[in-house]
Image (tube, helix red, strand yellow):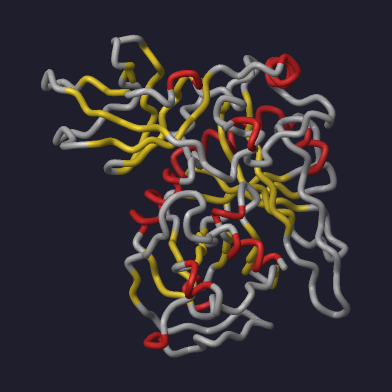
Length: 357
């Protein structure tokens, strides 16, 4: 059912045009319990594109107090442990959340993985942007005080994104079983079904996915921007981005019923007022682009020259911009350093709640 939901989310005409990845084959070994029509023959066609995310890093938080410690710092509830089935280990569970500063602005976006306990102390892995790995560890150490937790990086674990190669071919792929075996974790991306699966492993991740082939990382980021999913410090500048303007609620990243956490006041007040005038929207840049690209923070203007928002980050002709919602349907442009202008169009991802469209 989980895989079926993922594949339905990749149907043509939903969330943009169908995509094709630039892939190359490699030897593989399968995850346990997985078998598929594409099997071990790369020539038979890949069902999954696997992207090694070298810019992502992992920190482990472990100890008797790890759960209450994290709950006081994160915007979301912690992922619950998965149910054990007989002798098989319980699957890992993932969640999405932000660490906020005291003003309620995003510091770090993380994907949390709850590890099976096996009669040991509770443990969580936090996936973050590698550029803020040290800063995140310092942030955790600052609030640790006397809690019984240990915080340590996990440099040997690598993060992979796993996405269907195409809607048609993914329909014939084996369902990916959520697993946590030894140093390997496979679980659904908690932000949206459009982002597929997350794989953590010390091994060659490509070899673990039945029917998987190596994808071009540029394709992953282009697809992510087309779906309107921010990730890392370029999309969510620390101390600048506001969580609800960054669509945290749409990506299952905030709980409005949990206990107190740092930065909660502004987030809760904004939610209960029900007014979010600006949001991060996926945008496409039209026409020739400057050789140096579009600078982060560049003003986005309406046809009359009124400020509509700011360009945040992107890859090539796709990216994200923080825009006032009332302006996204009109013609927009960015003025360039060469005294020219680049037109852009904003879209509303169809996986967002319909009340925002």
